[in-house]
Image 1 (cartoon, rainbow, N blue to C red):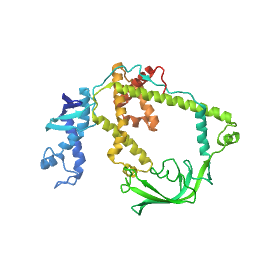
Image 2: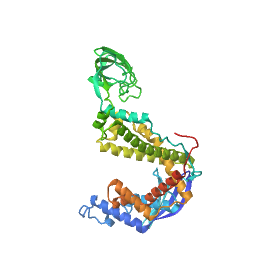
Image 3: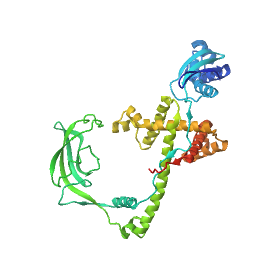
Image 4: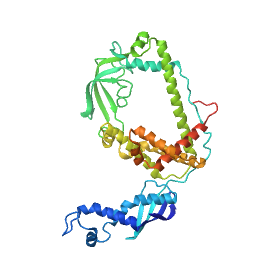
Length: 431
């Protein structure tokens, strides 16, 4: 298999003319024959035992050609692209076969390839450093979350419901005077002000007292998942049984002993401050990396084919599907539940996909500009990291990822390290 010619037909689209030699083609045809013969009945022969020559005589000498060519296209195209110095992008391929016969065949394929890239001023990118200061308020807020986890609900008497209260209610919804499915519940505990229900619902409970029965009117959002209710004005009958509020425990030494391994509030606060400081350092590091990566992507000069963005979206959705399956869900059920169609789901990943593609191409441009390469030792180390991350044998990782793929990752990591280490704080600015 070899490249005969490579011609650019439009931006990021090339026509490759590829030749497959007779020996390679013959081997592929024979492989197809061995697979297909099991299903072929020829008079005078047991099923699956007819010689290839007999089958070809009966059905034509080209009977196995199409399947053989389909088997050969991927590898032939990949090899031809490498020979032409191009990297293929998964996209529509236009194929045209010429001269198929015992001496092999020639085909033309119009393919999408990764774009030419260039980048400048990637060293010394400015970023706004995040403040590392841990305030007393930060510590108080962290301790308050511990208080809330250990809080208890107590009944409120002598006042109306307020935001932050838990209202215990019966409710039933009506559309045009008729009760609708899913609009009824009894003794439901609703935290007011958290926005759990549709806009306007919780707000109209505020101000009412325990024991009251009243009616509220709300309009469902236009994009509500239940189409029969989307955008519709409805009425809810409410019976407010009880109002409760969260009572937080006092933060004293006894409380600290109950919720931690420390003896005093002072020791606990010191520990909280230390942990928050470490978390803030990591957060600041990630924030810096994100700022630099975003700026780097903006410096990229390239005409990026849409197929690269679409493929990135496919990958994100594929990962999401795997996570859903691990929870016993399928993506169609999920989309129905949240009121999304396929296009809306893809739209959610669009910005993230574009950023990922641009950063990867920018790093490729940096690696090319800096002459960054990946050594055999670095590639082997990356294989071992992946094996450890996936908890599988290295051999399985090597079967799943080519050396070229791993080499790209290694070069990108080295390029990113170079860019990140050269980044500088913006003068007088703090995020």
